[in-house]
Length: 367
Length: 113
Image 1 (tube, helix red, strand yellow):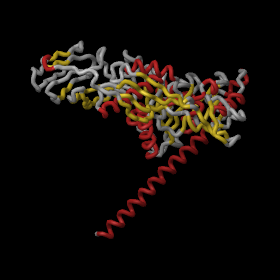
Image 2 (cartoon, rainbow over the protein chains, first blue to last red):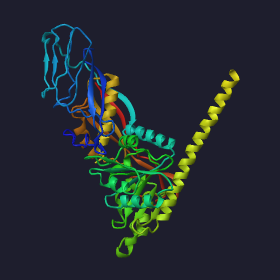
Image 3 (cartoon, rainbow over the protein chains, first blue to last red):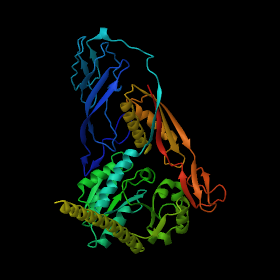
């Protein structure tokens, strides 16, 4: 866990492998006197989204507020992988040799003290318009996933619910019922363990486990990585089983066709009112474990009415993944969704073929 | 607590903008958070303080502009203001509402030095 902010950064794992992305980038910045520094540093990203977590020491590593009287521009490279030391041995002149070091303290040794001058009050605050969506990065990844899935003719669903509502059991039953009729694959999201992916694989369908560590939801970046490793079902179904949590996954688009909220009758019928964001984000609500209704005081009509109060256009299916009751409507929904995804892909392929034929005709005419 | 991820998203946007503008410091960050978005402003504030530490926006003032929720009421055929997802139309009480505004979560502007 990140010790600075307490987030689960650095703990995301896909099939037990850390999500590593090594790259470096340049950070130019200007000091009050107009000196331009360009730092390039290597980050090891092991985390969610695009967030950069460099564990620097107690202070920001590259805010060196020093002024070089001669106005020199210099660049230095250092590795950010934990705390580090910089040694600036420019000896009064304009040549600064900064070398990366791997010590534990963040210390600067400047060999040109006389040339330093600080000019406080020289800066002026100004406003900078940004107008950018906070989730823009996630949404860009989601759009990429969506395009990839559309290219492959995949019908993808993001299953969300509280823990224990029966998402995995529903998937196992669904795969059993549709086996041999269409390709299917599953991305399993849990904080820890590969237990759910193991349960899916036992049915014969390919599954990949994403462990979010301390994270409370899957994001589009994690799913994009999982899609790279998962020999995704072309012209088939993809189920993304989100982390059991009725709050956080609501805000994160993964590139799915629909969010499906699973509510079991062993929970309270007022859950749609208590967690409205999730039921608002979903297009379909599955009321699961209806075989238990005779033994409970759960009011299914009320639950449905509450869901529709939060989201008037939500569709509701009542079923039991254990007894199989009501499963047909769910399977029909999946078949119809897949047929539409395949038709769309075919349409794209057909229009590309027409385009190629047209270009070939033009080429032939010129030859 | 997805406010932590959102706060990281804010810092990232702010850092990108600050880098492009080649500024020394970000002294204020102004967000627009709709009342119907899935963000709890106080939780976001708490997370922002934690996440901004060590970034160019360390110590920056966080201003959160509240955007009221609006929806189209199918019964009234009119645009109405709604305070929360659960609430019905303030005029007729109907829940046949189509949300039209108040779901934004945006970084509006930053004050740089």
